[in-house]
Image 1 (cartoon, each protein chain N blue to C red):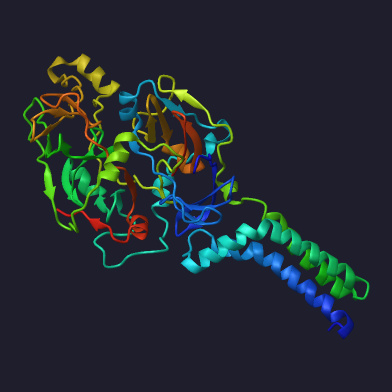
Image 2 (cartoon, chains in turn green, brown):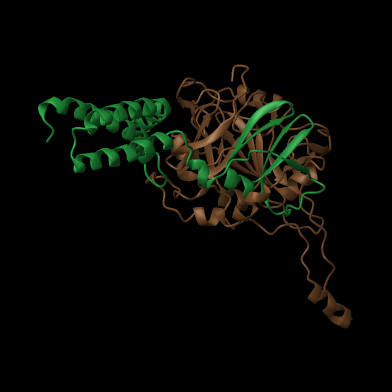
Length: 163
Length: 307
């Protein structure tokens, strides 16, 4: 165990590292597919995820600061722990900024339409349809089941079509 | 939202219904309800846009000048035509034992003020057009001529309730009588808000149509499409032997509803095409095709149509 003079920076390092890791992993664990989400659990997950981008950054900075403080007075295995923990902290900090849900279902970055006259869509395929005034649009479910969300403007009205 | 355009992205999942976030405020929104459930805009709701779930053929017949979302070339190979059957096999994480439906049963749920109602898809396909009353509003729930498309209307013509039935085809096949159903009726109440929404069409950003992560429309119970049967092989055979010449492909049977109030003829768009009501259109009710577990989870007061 660290001596009493180094215990405080070690505890602070542990607290900062745990905060950074928790901000990513707790919401990541709760909001995962094919598992039940309880209302309190979901609320906690969303609150943490909302704060994670800047929270992990601050916590990672603090963790790094305390790691440097204790580095010189640490033996090799304590340094190994510091490095491993900082790897996980860095991973959490990066992941808190990435939307991994869109790794599986890519968004439509450049939304494009084709006319009904030129579309090769089979008549039996299902579509979601929206119309405002003369502006009628079809969103093939075969595509929506992959992208899941399409931001669009129909007849001047901003909408999001979801599936 | 309040004059500000929001742009949404997929951000997570809540009991197999997606969570969305908007780029502008990072608020969390529930896909099926359009409600902000966490973040700066918590407590607000997106306005639901009237939308349809149709076959492309049906839509194209109505909107030949419409626009179709083009596939994204780099993702075309990833579009999975078997997505729905595959997803339908996944286990559910919430269930409602004791209800009349199984978790993965597909329903058409009515998005209207007061307790909604769920119409089992298989029942709708068999009984369409269904005439019903929900929260005091007379409704017409119709599966289209393709057996896959559906729409829900207020079955009231000039303030007078009406029932609808399929017009018999020229060959004299029996018309499908409309079904009147009042079971599960809870209470009569005004539904003018929904009617007004259907009439005027909402004007702000909203989920145009929502689905859980587990889309529906997987039931194979739909009747045959209106495509005329016939293959090249059978045609060649007919040329060789006139004695066994098959009947020429039958033209698609017209899909026409008749109403009991004015005896007018109505198309699948809910508009009278002949008769005293010609030119009039029925008001629409927003409806969602969904799995029972998902619909029930977000509409705990829903009733189930029975007949």
